[in-house]
Every structure is written in C-alpha cells, then in structure tokens.
Image (tube, rainbow, N blue to C red; front, side, top):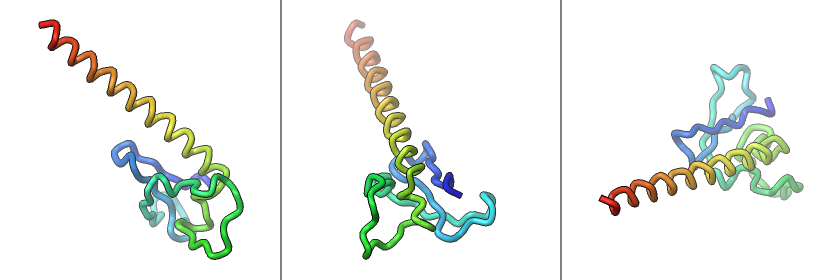
Length: 96
C-alpha cells in the first residue's frame, strides 16, 4: 500500500496516487496531482485542517518523500542531459 505512488515519465509534472483503499493495482482508482504536492510537508506533521490529496495520506509518507527525491534527481539529470545534447547539436551546426 505505501508504494502506491506512481510516476510516469510521459507525464513528468504529475504523480498518481489512490483515491480509495486499493484492492489491487489493476483496479486502483488514482488521481493525478502536481509533483509539488508530493511530500508537500517534508515528512512533518500534517496540519489539522489538511484535506488529504490521496488515500491514507500516502503522498505525505516517508516513502513518498524518498520517492520525490528520486524523481527530482532523475528529472534534473535528464534535463541536464537534454541541455548537453542540444548544446552539442548547436556546436555541430556552428562548425559546418
């Protein structure tokens, strides 16, 4: 259950989490949320008036915070790789 945060590279600005208690991954109803909402409180206690984004606050769990770090590191790495590739392509055109 705690690992029901889903990230898809095809939609890099959102994550998916269950709305109701999942009975299986095949039948899980999920909601998309902006990536900034994942681990929004950095593992700290949730405010009393907090309205949960996901079932059982799975998006605020220790696992969710670790997952966000992993996702962000991968995004930064991929963006840097794309910038390098674009720079190399530009340099190739300039040398012709």
